[in-house]
Length: 320
Image (cartoon, rainbow, N blue to C red; front, side, top):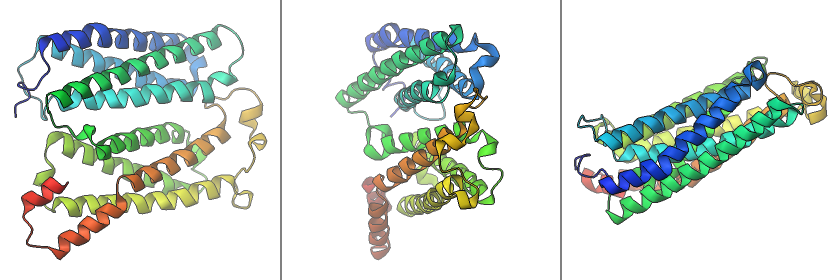
């Protein structure tokens, strides 16, 4: 199936570009401009949100220009998978920035022009999130009507996107190196987050590019090993991160009021204790996502595959 043949019709592209993509670009640009105008007052969380909005703006403009002009060159993977996948990521990232920025930074700003700009930027980020969600629903409905298969239309695909998005937010918080450099166990947690993020990124790229059949291992074995390894690593992080961050005997801070960054003047990273708690919650969320992606189902399929070695490779691929 060629990517050219399954690109949406011209009227559908015009609808997306004029009624969705243009407002998306405007909302992201306004959020980006408001935070950028704050200068040094935007803080580290603001810098991360700024980078996310800048990335969303750039990719949205690129996709819009490509679809409007119908470029004839071929991308390394089927084009029809990119807009829906990107729209899912953009929806999640704009939603997360709309939540993170007010909670972890805006509430600590003093009343004044900077606080007003930060609140307005959060509002425009919420608007962009809604627009990207409409984009996802519209594209999803179009692909379903045209019977176009896509990995992100499946529950495992959506959970993989959510897992990688949550991992990105974890990296935003652990960019504050004071959270973990003082304890080897916490450094191990950072290694866990990095390994699992690389795994899910590789899995998404293989699915989007259609290269998963080129693996030296059979597909069920690859998914089984990847899922089990990520699950075990996240279990270790789920135990070690709260233990060394909130247990006073191990050098942690069990109470919010013991962290001076939360009760005194605003620091560059905001309330550090809140960030420790956020990483622990996000670790638990990703652990639940790994369970819901079918860890037990992967095990059963792996045993079924090993018990029936003569099953054809094509049947295995269809089962996945």
